[in-house]
Length: 392
View (cartoon, helix red, strand yellow):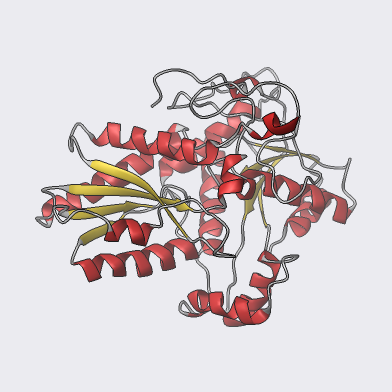
């Protein structure tokens, strides 16, 4: 945790609670058979001029698993778990599911919502941290789907805040890391363990403009004005993950004091000349000291065991550990952990209030949160400014 509260206005950028009539679970999407792989990758890379020959180089990750990404089944399971939690709380909100890059697409989900009579929808996105690809791109694609379907003005979409430091996300990660350290100890590899928190690498330029722009992660305010000053804020993608990783390690210190840890990156792609966040997890494993007795790999940056977890961690990273003769445990993502599912519905109850009711208090376990409901116009800018939902 940080020692002082940075001068962020994020916690003040909230929307008034409202009465919603449905929930949209917004996912990334993934192929579900060998014939889906190249069309899916075309969707993901649309507009970037990537030839099929290059896509086929990436496709072997999916083909290794029969062309099936686990992400769609993960979201089916999460939808069922959310519905059960909603029923247990008596909220009466149906859950719909749509993806950015594969069926069911956002446009199909919006048409279904509208046909079923729903007009005010709360969106749960399956990403916890602030970045273009983890927040703004979802909002842009939802806005595009509203335009595509002609449902602008017919359906109101509001997105829940990023939940990186919500107890429902943090506590399952604490339990997972604690369990991984226990497993190393039981194997006789717990003398000097190391924990690596793995997250998706993104271009450094995107990382630099992630999150609100009024301050830097070190707490330094950004001067008002134009010109170069406009590009001096942001940088919250990595800072959020460092804050949560530090919190996780603080929580396990009662049983495992003094364990070294690091934040590492995976799954970079694109032009190798473009700087991306580092260190790569495999290089970080190779650089560990010879005295390290075992490694716990925590996929902190992900909410489910999708392809980049299954391939980049379970295949490549664990293979790197094996080559080094290093004992390693890859611990679980939050998936459908009951605490995570309950936490997502807590986020719903921050925003959805029945007549005469009161909203749930906004929970956050780091000094960076609770995060914003409404994003500033210059928050997490990507390739170009596009229409988005819920922007100030």
